Image (cartoon, rainbow, N blue to C red; front, side):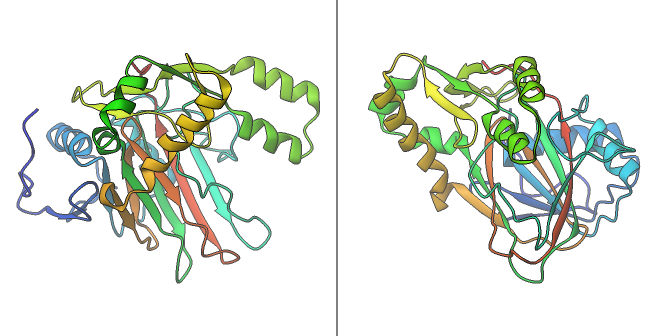
Length: 285
């Protein structure tokens, strides 16, 4: 794939990069319209290149949000989250004084699935006056910056991912152990390559995260824990990040195959209401 230039092929669109490493805001596009296949193809290519795309002033209906996401693939229904009753493709991520945020950790979404998501499209419905930014990290660069010794250690290793965080939350909410066991059986732990190959670009990325990755094959428990702790820290490098300040009706679309994100919880107890639609992906290799 040839690197994209800073200018979109349509004069009405303007690209503004948030950092050299990751993140581009696209101005002059209306996601509520049925975009042409040429524009969808261009957005797909730009997503792979820049990892996360941002759009402002997109007052989308639920149907428009779903329709835009569906242009990039089949949509996912999340089994654990508070989904929209009429449109189960939409996950509601609402925080207020009674519901503090709990996802202020670096992670990739649903890596506990056999086929984790391609990407997610997050829409801001209500945001705090100050705070509540989301940070994104380019995990291809995180891998590139690893010492050669570490790259050799993890080159062919597999990492075990599970959904224990969601099972624990079910227990906190009062679910009975029988229901929890049934869900755990439906979504058992999975193993993915520690170093993932992007299915479009062929680039390598570090594919472990703090919330869902439990262990590395081929290492004893102490070695695995120590190495994972070091790998988790790579996302904290500002040189591979961008930071997005939300406004109402802003949209972020990230490539979950090569990106981790961190939702800052600094705004609480203010209210932050977001809606997410997720696109199905492929088994990592």
